[in-house]
Length: 152
Image 1 (cartoon, rainbow, N blue to C red):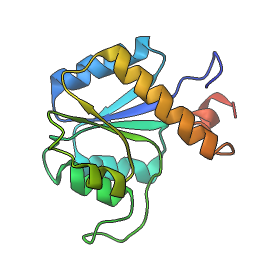
Image 2 (image 1 turned 135 degrees about the vertical axis):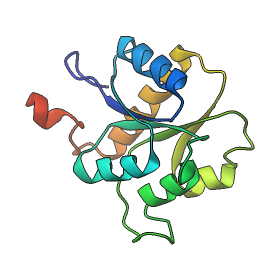
Image 3 (image 1 turned 30 degrees about the horizontal axis):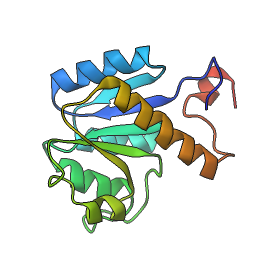
Image 4 (image 1 turned 90 degrees about the vertical axis):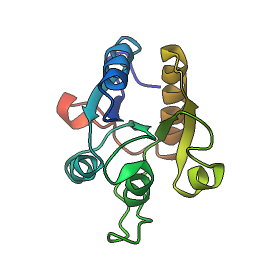
């Protein structure tokens, strides 16, 4: 896991202000840096410019929606060039298990589907677990904010 000075940077993607506030404020206390975006299209643009250590995605995201965003991020959309924008752990927050079927979750590489209502401690544990597994598979990849803080 990260050193005492390193905090994983989590991108929260939701157009629900209450959910964003809950996650943004709570995850800072759990040991994460957070950024939030309310649009799938903005998320795609941000991934052209920078990286994150993990992403939390609201399954009820408006606009092009969570599923299309996932497909585009993973390079699986037929509406965009099939270029993978990120392979980081993505956890999806859903109201029910029917919202993100298991076959879809597997196909687009969702690390975990978290069902509402959420407990912040559970979200933090699942984020740390997803990031830890990803880091074990990608030991040479820098932390998202490593260049900014001058750390590997």
